[in-house]
Image (cartoon, rainbow, N blue to C red; front, side, top):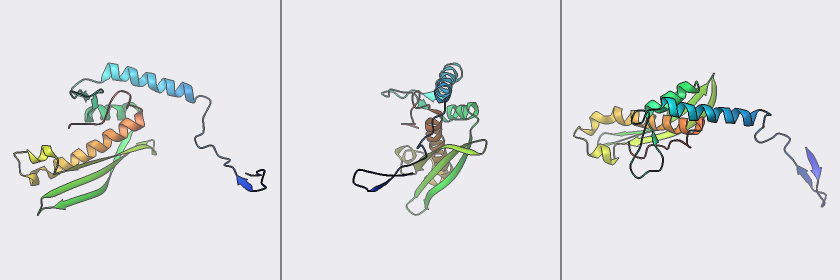
Length: 165
């Protein structure tokens, strides 16, 4: 839509709302929140679905908990490798994954996760780093899943991303 301002300049105004608000949006959001609260209380188990890291204010969402929330909200994760480094001479292995969550074929959210062989926990391993490349790859995918679930399910009020795997 075009209008003129006081100086006679043409001003373009958007005719589409940035985020359409539906009449039942408040009720749907309240319902979603109630389901989340009830599910966390009834189904999420400490040290299985989430863990408490000393010195943190919120529990950390673990992979089993993220998977349960995916089932609750009928979300299907799909992983995309964004970047990888496999340098056997250094040795350095780095994986960056993006997890995209879909419901009925529609993308509803995403999250990124990275992991590399230079992290302290992999430097302290008794195994050769070459034996841990699959573990490092899977850890990047897990971090991406947790990030996607936290943002897509509105779970950040209840949980945080892993501070210590």
